[in-house]
Image (cartoon, rainbow, N blue to C red):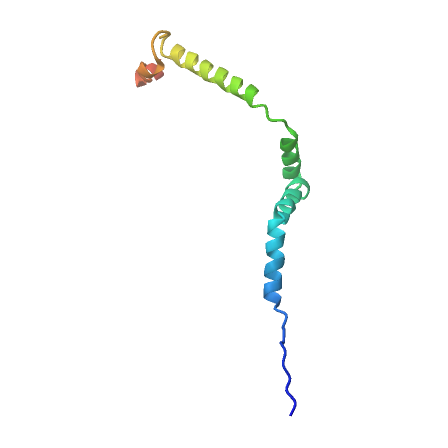
Length: 102
């Protein structure tokens, strides 16, 4: 009598696709595809996105601008209250109906 031994392998397409997708995600392919679409394939929105991406972010200048705007808002608020220039802003009373109707 003759006997045969060995292994039979079969190809599983679902595992192959899952492996391919896992490698693509690890290589950040979806990120680059979304970036390309956002930068070049959405018309006017892409132009705005490209312009925003090219703009340099200067946090120091933004900090100074925000601080100046906060100080201006405080001075304007004090002026609207009738020129109360002393004391803390938190101790000031808010607007009343009579003040708004003046």
